[in-house]
Every structure is written in C-alpha cells, then in structure tokens.
Image (cartoon, rainbow, N blue to C red; front, side):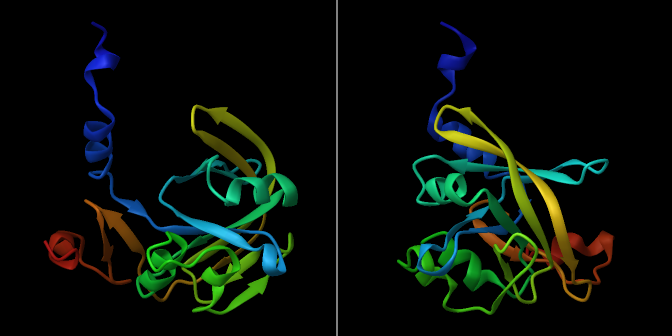
Amino acid sequence: MSAEALISETDFKLSMRHLAGAVSVITVGDGQHRTGFTATSVSSLSAELPSVIVSVNRASSSWPALQRYGCFCVNVLAADQQQVAQSFAGLDGRKGAERYGNAGWYRLKTGAAALENALTVLDCKLETAFHYHSHAILVGHVCAIEIRQDIGPLLYWRGGFHEIPAEVDRSDLTKALGQ
C-alpha cells in the first residue's frame, strides 16, 4: 500500500487546521452577479511582476464568475472584520451579492470590489488558472493595492478566528492569540 493511501481526507484536513493563515475575502463580479469567498490560501508569487496565487474550489459559485470577469480582489481582513469572513464563508446563509451587505465597498482599477478598512487590498487581473483535482490555482497580476497599517490581522487557526493587535510584543504572542 502506498503512503498516499494511508492519509485520509479527514486527517489531512485536521493537519491543515494547524497552519495559521491570514484571512482574506476574494471578491469577483459586478452588480447582482457579485460573489466571493473566504480564503486562507493566498500567497505572494512574485515581486518582480507583482502577483499572487489563490486557490478556489471549482464547485464554488465564484469559479464561473472568475472565468467570466477575469479579475478579482484579495481583501486581507483586519482583526475587526470577522463578520465579513463569516458571511463570505457562507456561515450566515448568505449567497452571492447578499454577502456584501454588512460592509462598505469601493472599486479599484479592475472594477472588483475592495473592502473598506481592510488590512490590505490587492486588485488583480486573472493571468491564468491551473486545475488541480477539485480546485483551481489562480495567478493574479496585482494592478492596484491599498494598505492600512493601524490595525492587526484576522487569522484562522485550529478551526477558529483569532485577532492579533497591531502592536504586539512578539514574546507575548501566545497571550494575544488567547492561548
């Protein structure tokens, strides 16, 4: 039996819950065709040609919108934006454009929705998407950015949201995470 067959989907998911990640909301679409999703699978790809990678489930309602519009916005959430994360994760039952209701939004270069008071927003043109089983790995060329430095990030770790203050003593990080 191969090593891959010994790892269950449940065990893999449990293992991945130990990766602390910044929480982002990926927005795509326009008007009533707006949609989006909560993601911790966002990473920088290149500074030479500013770009990021984002993973999305191709069964998501966001996947057809990404293909149609060819752009998206990565909204890295601030510590006080847990409600936005929950809405875009579908935890409050909202779908599509309804998810935008509890926050302020504006447009940057591509026209994708940028979240007011996000920690940072990365307005991206979809360069390419690689298919890997159930997911697509998006490569986005960053066309515009905005940064907010006066607040800490919202993190997802061990199945829950955690806030880190903007100014935290590194030796006291455990306390900041409520551990």
